[in-house]
Image (cartoon, rainbow, N blue to C red; front, side):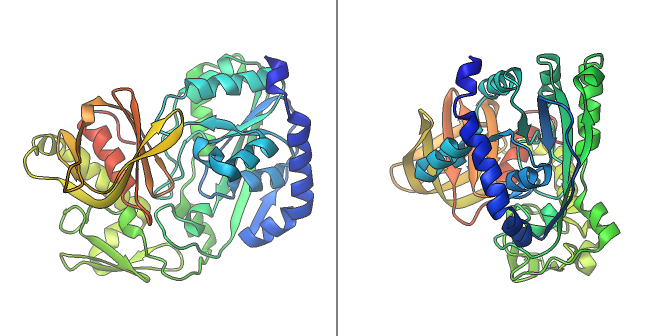
Length: 397
């Protein structure tokens, strides 16, 4: 198995080295990236990092000057470009909306073969600027293989490219190794102790960093796409009433706010929710506090989204099912309807996996079938994720 895992490894190492030397300086310049270099002593190591930018993998390679295989979304490995990426770098695929067993198996095979692996344990870019939930399964890896651990953290990435936003910004991005732990340091620790280390080292708060450094993130239409995050108004508590254009944010109820170049929301009515973290915390607490009421809402819709495209994932390939469909969310189900001959109902309780890609693709597994719901320009994926977790009595973190 080691021979199979190491297939193409020399090519991958050469590509990393060649691209880092030839284009590394340009990527650093484009991303306004600065980093604190620190040599990694051990091998093999599993490198864990937070994640807010599509450039993060490249920036990690540049700052650590080391080859490692990335765990990456299988989406980027589809099509002609994806095949080139796979040939040149050999990433470990992670299927959205599917189980992670195969991915974990490949991680272990590579580490056992002496190959470093890097992954983003949150599994998703942050929606609000705080660190996402990290599965305990990540900590269990260190009980199944003899390897060290390196923790890495990016700061500034969220405000430079918010996941919900339609437009990018210009501003500083910083990266550094937080800690390196040898196998000898980890082997006698419990899974809980290793997990606590990971969570502590991965903890990032975009606004705590901003309060300390006051970095300006300039761009056009800074607020555009905000409705992809803000599905619930903190003033009137209504769904789907938030709108954004330019730097302005408003609600049908009359609430007005401005998203400024430092990432803060300015407005008299939302002083308590002047960051995306605080706004999203309000949304989560409101859903949890109204869980039982929402569960009973099976006749009147909770929310609705239009102009979605539906694909079924068959043998890891997208197959178009229907476009221009409307999703109507109730307390027990989501109904999809095209207004003509197509209708499909999915019950929250029968969705076994649900995940998100960028701000425009929702992936889920329903009774063994995998689906993707997509809309150009994005839609509030986090609303579906949060309602699914809350309405099926799962923790919402």
